[in-house]
Length: 292
Image (cartoon, rainbow, N blue to C red; front, side, top):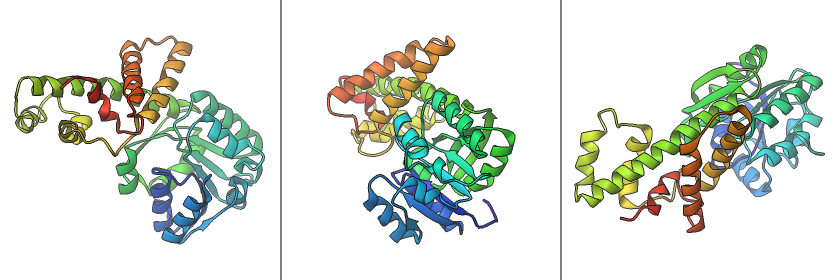
């Protein structure tokens, strides 16, 4: 992590941003946070010893680096380019790192806006979920200029286990789409495998022991097989957010000519789970649409 103490603004103190900002405070940085729900920001400040700002601009004023982890394209545009947005208050030469999963289009737009203002800009979506954020072991995929990445990498080390500079602006977001496309197919395959084992009256614990050490193994299997078998889904990465991410991937595929038949199908399967009231459940709840 960065050895230099920095003044850092963190915008968005939800299940991902809150722990990430906490790691920055623990690393010795001076952290000021903003959250749309003021009480969340104040609670974070009380627990971590930082401070809470009333607007993104107030948080960003005088900051060496501004980081964000919000909901979607519109949220990101508001906290950066809106009337009280961070870009209006950031000093020239300051660093902006966005950890939101958004479209590559807005990532590129913010990069252009940042360059005009003399800011360094990195689109840096993450993988690893809430547990990775809490443990400080997130995998981060970055789109940025070489100079912007060099400035951002020491800061991100506070909460990352792996940081990869993929390419220029937008490359981080398109790589996150690759990540979600891959996960979608794996979760569907895992769901079918589990239901097949159950229909065959197999001991699912022994099945896991047998297959988790071979070619079928995956992060999803190692971390979700047991909870899927028990029907436990009140944790992890919500289906609502996964559908948002898959929507971004499908939109980008229409633009770049890629074909995503499995991702498109699984997206509709997730829609079925949403309609049944499972939108806030972990993505592994995909298994619930299959009869047991």
